[in-house]
Length: 131
Image (cartoon, rainbow, N blue to C red):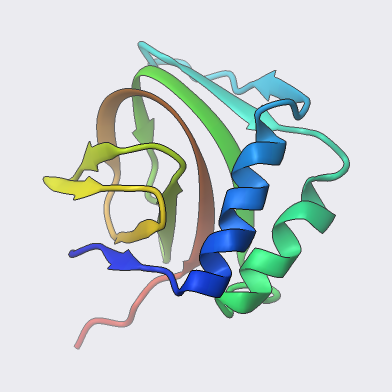
């Protein structure tokens, strides 16, 4: 698992999403055993805001899931069976032993625990088939 960087055109679209998300409507995600807080974007404008970026990244596909999250404290990004999570942080963060900056992303193939305060976009995609 090593980070990748998005292309310059996609970078501008992601920056637009990140700026918009600062004032978007959010709701707390209830987690039984989380020590931190996870807020999920529930703003009706999220679909039209993230679509240009997702299309440029070839991630706007049927079967994929998307969420804008505001994380604080110790939280986990859960791995769902049969799916991977592509993690796009809006601030610098270290996850899975990798330092990520804005414009970097990481495909997570297992649940990751992190202690941070940051906004991010996650895309849930079908898992890679392992031989």
